[in-house]
Image (cartoon, rainbow, N blue to C red; front, side, top):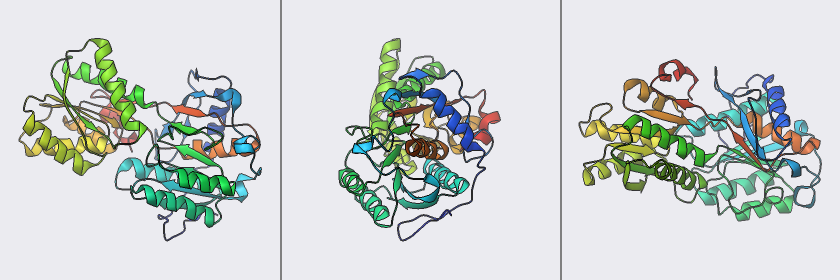
Amino acid sequence: MYQSQRPTASTARTPVASTRVAAVAAALLLLTVAACTKAAEPPAAAAAGGAGADQQVRSTTGASGACTAETYNGGVPKLDLATITVGFAQSEKEANPFRITETESIKQEAAARGIDLITTNAQSDLNKEIADIQSMIAQGAQALIISPLNSEGLDPALEAAKDAGVPIMTIDRLLTSKTPCVDYIGWIGSDFVEQGERAADAMIEATGGQGQVAILLGASGVNVTVDRTKGFKDRLAATGSALQVVAEQTADFTRERGRSVTEQLISANPGITAIYAENDEMALGAVAALKAAGKQPGEVTIITIDGTRGAVQGIVDGWIAGVIESNPRFGPLAFQALEDFYSGAGVPATTIISDKEYTPENAAAELANAY
């Protein structure tokens, strides 16, 4: 049975339809044939979140050396996923739609598969995430799914898992200096560089390629921030755009910081005509700052990344020009990966998912599909 344990556990929620498991399996098996391949249109891996809440595998790498229980870090016991306890370590407090949806997806897929699940939340504290992972191992978790807070710094937790023979599947943020099938089974996430590139394309289209841009950077120390920044800047340079990045400052992926940083930036740089926010929460904070400054919808062009309902509504209302999706519904793919790990089918080192885009043309119709 699905369970959530305290003191570090978050509250349990109800299951999603288990028929989605087969779709996930089909998608992954089709795409582990060759390294670095792109799927034409694999079957949708439907997950928690209602109509249109699908997550499609776009490509995989490392398929030729797919990780199994026999090959993981010298070999771990081959277990029946349906009979073991799995732990999920959430990195950030569930105060924004991305984290809420991510955790919900993990919980609902566990419930749909009848898997015992322990969940923890690190509340954006790296030391707590380390302690959470160690605690779940002590509680009897035999496999882990983790959403790392930082791309580096989880070494004590990773070593504890190795010592206990507990394999780890990672989602969302990448452990940049660690080795797949040694430190972790594999990673499922978005192509964050490509997200930045697509955000640049959307910005060029929305602004005509002219103006002064401020960047609201995400949290320091994570590959998401580095990659989204690189993709955006590199695409502006590659296209020869006249858009000029005049300011950039960390706003930590939070709405509060998005607002305060935007207030500072537009005060110091009154010529700013556009804002690239590296997530929707910062974008919505920017909208609040612009409203407080007496700006009108569309006066400052905002492009952002995530796909939350609030940001898509911002497009409908005219405050946001475009949103590049970053899909957090990892539950079906993560649990299918664990099943393939134990069954011997194997898990690729990297699984890249497909992310859609919200525009002024589709925002109203797609609003119900945002998270």
